[in-house]
Amino acid sequence: MENRYRTNLKKVFLTDQELATLNDRIVQSGCKNFSAYAIKMLLNPNMTFLTIDTSNYDDLIFELKRIGNNLNQIARTVNQTHLLSLSDRELLVQGISQLIKEVEKDFNIKCQQLKEFYGHH
Image (cartoon, rainbow, N blue to C red; front, side, top):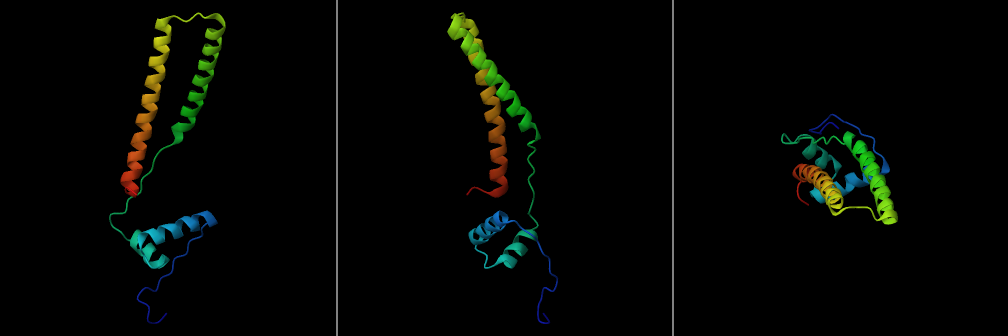
């Protein structure tokens, strides 16, 4: 320890899965060991953290399930009664298409943020 340039020690506790992920990242980075990787990652002045708010996804999933149930009820009624006009069908298709576009748009934005943060691997 007398001849060490770095004399301060920091410890971290990891789960087995976190350790495996960390080891994979160390290998991918080309660093020789954890210490070199940690110093490179922690002391990088360009290091930023990306936070993606997923709190509204639970609400989105709930709403999508409700919509799915409604669609199943509509399909069952239409199949039994054959009472669905062409304009009603078009309105349903447009509504579903719009919902899909909005979900895909939000998903693509989040994916792009992750790609920018982690790089394109």
